[in-house]
Image (cartoon, rainbow, N blue to C red; front, side, top):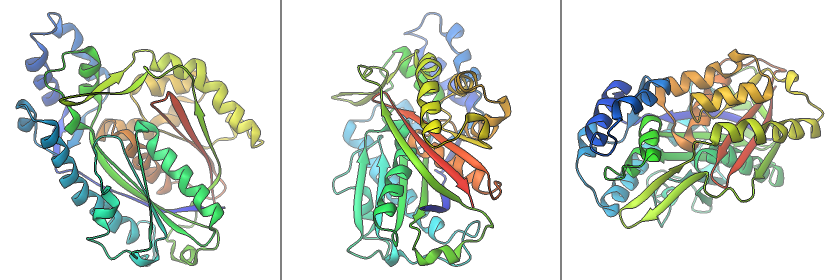
Length: 361
């Protein structure tokens, strides 16, 4: 089975406390929401303490065209994406020796927060010494589910090509999509949650020679993956694309959807693998928000502490869309032990879920 050998992240330069973001939102939205004081607790209820942004908070106080925001996205993506790849392939947390750039067979680049053609990995391949024959698979539009989906697609690639070494590069600069003139409640909620983050994972096929490079006694092997689309749910989550850029769509019904739809989805997937929810040691959940994590616990009857790691990442980084689950996975990879089972889960536009069953060996 394919194995996740290394995960590392690149942190954007500006660390901003949730209290500062709340003050910014109060100033911005006070004219649109006469009851703004009543709505502001959404920032504290998110249980986020700080987030990282590609730009300082002052930058968001001015209007920026779609072109300006997208140029900023490309510039920061190149810098942070290059850093994340370098850290992943030479990680002292997970690798005894670096994996050479030229031995990477494919790069899956995941994003939903900016546009680039040629895509970001092509631009990075002009900076780092990858083989010119490296396969490029950019995936756009999966939102918060994208990181888990990228791991699933890398797993399937390595099943087909068991000697392969594959990178999953997730780049999400959600802050650069901010619309200061969008006075909707979706935008207010998005402003309370979303952040910037970049992470990279190395997935190796069963016959890859780089298994010998692993540093840790146990690493996660991917046993199975599952993708599920809920039909007629296009309005639950996503973007409205307008002249000024991307406008967030974020339904209040997401926690209830998690409770009513995801539970049977997860249990059905696990049962197909001969596993019960009670067999899981780790729940590697994308932390879409505190309410979403609570909904996971309720629908799957999980012990509350099984979302502690996801909550820790949410508290210290916010919701970084597709990149977030890689931050969560890294924390588990630093602490999990041989024989333990984990389920990685993320939800995204579509409305859809991505699930991966992992076993540490």
